[in-house]
Image (cartoon, rainbow, N blue to C red; front, side, top):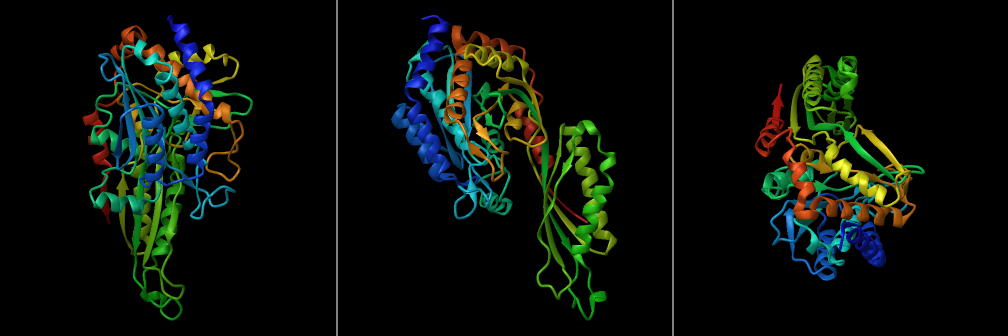
Length: 438
């Protein structure tokens, strides 16, 4: 078969199996789990890969998560197709469960899309015509939430990093992967695909302001008000916003997770969480330094002390034009040439950004949903567009990368210069993993 015949066979196989692809997406949607808690979702994905596709599955690739390897006997490059397992919290969403968990970021769509691509490549028999390996990965903990829970997992030695793909880089899951692809869902209006997105990275922080208790009514002058310290600290950061470069797109968005103990005692233990986001690594480091300066000054202004726990966050996602070119050709093959938005600018963050600094990656956005991500308005409006289009696009992209003994993938790899080696990446992560006391 020529390449057009191979691609048409992949498309037809996905169409023939669309009911099981959509059904697994629905099943995951109905059973949302937060990051590093996706035990049931991992089982669902593992069962699909093993029973539907006959693949051997490795579970627990990053505490939760799983991976299936295909074409392991081939000598060519390895492409990994990823889908994310975890849900977010949105108590106001009509489909949220009793603890507020809901797949309002479309990760259930990602996983079903990844499984759909696997169906297209494996059930069609097209894999045998490709000169390279393919891994199908269900990855945990993309949403950077429940920091106390993840801190306990880390203290217990179960994880090193709070983000799933960070953990997978650290534990070697990506060591034999040459390139990786995945997608996110997004409300694209009347369009169906957005290509070439870029994003911010961030450094996470937990902050403790330490004051002194006193009776708030009769002797407040004997205390040191840690809540006042926190309020001053936030205003100090606001006062520095004009020093952030517009091109760095800096974001600082703190929440007070503990404002005191009881109302008639001067607050002596106040807690804050936040990210410091920016478009570049240098911008992240610069903004983080200024934020810390403001936080420390707020504490010292009222005589309080402060403890800042720095947590390695995510890196900005990079656009790799060589990978984008392959995707775009396949979007045209699917008849979507007039349904594409070229380029996207996101000040949110993805842990796939970390991977993009080490190997060539591809991360388009597909439609089929309505409403903002992480909001109560989010809903899946067109299941076939949401689940099947990205499955087809990713599978066809793999065909192009690995056909002819992996010729296109090899050319991309020959011309690829990583922003960081794995060793440099881990060194940078360690530099942001510290506690500052002042």
